[in-house]
Image (cartoon, rainbow, N blue to C red; front, side, top):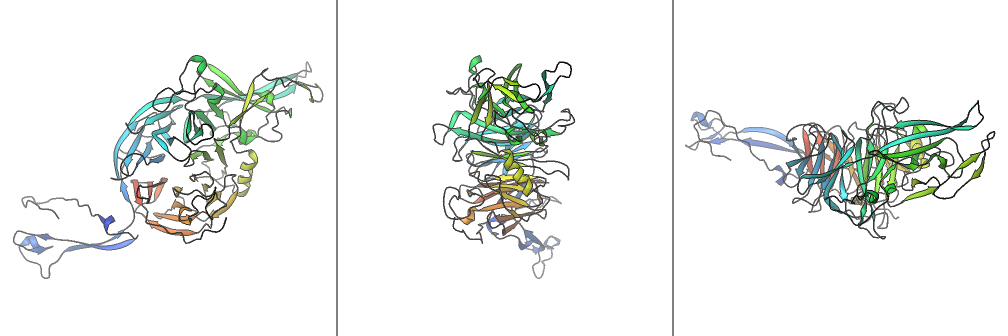
Length: 561
């Protein structure tokens, strides 16, 4: 209630209804009544004409209460991606990239309100937490992909300041083949060069631990990112992006550059230049990718920083790739596992006819080196006559053993062949989700284990924060089954009709339905509150909706492993 002065003709008052204290089941229908009492004790809707209503009357309305609360963006704009940090605030904070205003919006979970913003680079898009270890702990630092530039912002969210911008390299790709000069009869190289856009789009963070432990090595915090394409990449690769990784803590000892942590403090370890960056090509290999195979249609990769170019893959290695498989469609999604050990990549696409691919990256599997030297071919048969394998004559080429090989990606295509619209990955990186006409559930080898019938046009989804099951295991506790509790084996998916639906990722059935006010049209993220409750934040047309999920009991059992 509120006391009014009685001197104004019209007064407007806003009441906090506190429905969350009396409603725990959704949807719930309530009848709302309100009335006035004047100084003479007259009560009712007609009290102010001096006539006491008989019986006492009140205005009334019927309302339907659904889960969640919607908060508008403070200065407008829209949200591209979001992430939850449990370290700050009473219940954690949510960081949302706003490309329209070139900033990160900060949302406090406890008060369910926006509490600040942080200016970053141009058109911030993807966002990820800075890892501390491979057990799920993160620093109070975020990594933001500035899609309007060729850099990522390293942001201190505790002090609300961008610490630095990390410049990303330019990768130049050569397709190298050999042909016989008809005039001289000698073999000559034929080189086709492509320079892809370096503008980052979505990001996922991983790290490599020290000495077999779990703490991230000081010089091995790695961000995997997709790039947003431009039209000036040649007809063959027009509107195509790529996937790369960048070591954000590596350094160049040759020029005396310190390795820098998130707070700009110098680090103790040093990495060679070759460990700074990697262009993903391993997924597109075909035929024999043995460095001794002598294939003549090969790939060469350069990393260019400033005016310095470094060769990361030599054509002389004989690596043959499928040219069509090398690049990725626009809006290729990237997300990391909750323990920062793995990254999942889902190829997007804008056309209805597009069908795309999924790829995993395991940061714990290190980059290997191949050494090769000169190959001498017979001028008629093109058979290699001499293969000199003395290391160092032309330098090493780098292959990342953590990138999904082509056979796993082709298996995914064979079993799905559908446009990818969003992706998800669980805490330990052993369950992957791809959402399209249905939700496809994949294990860590990208093997399809089942489908969930949710063909909504809305693609927001995320897994239970404690989901640590391998997709094809749903049973008792073990290495790949987390706690074994089936209540942790859930995913939450937004629907077109303003609902959040919980599904089981092993039996693929619906477990619960939580109605909200507006459909989630953008990202959906699930976090765990200090109280242990699951908390959902999603982007709607009117702003950001936050929902404390009711306790959800899985109706499906925990089968034996």
